Image (cartoon, rainbow, N blue to C red):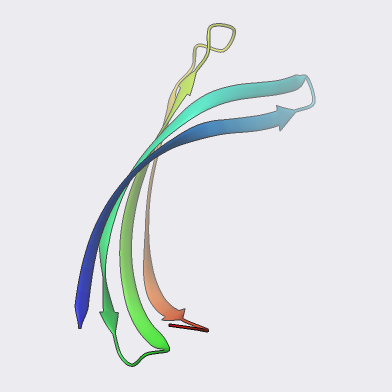
Length: 77
């Protein structure tokens, strides 16, 4: 069985430095698919894009793109 998914999320991201900490709003979009091998094991492929938006005192913004491929283990179903 193959399952596909898409997700959207947002939250707070904080970076601590020696001079203080910086707060960002994180907006995330991810998508991927999962292939179930049996009821306990699956193989996943996941792509995620994150955008960190700086607040007024910290106007810098950053992008992050990542992907994951690998097994997943389910302890219950």
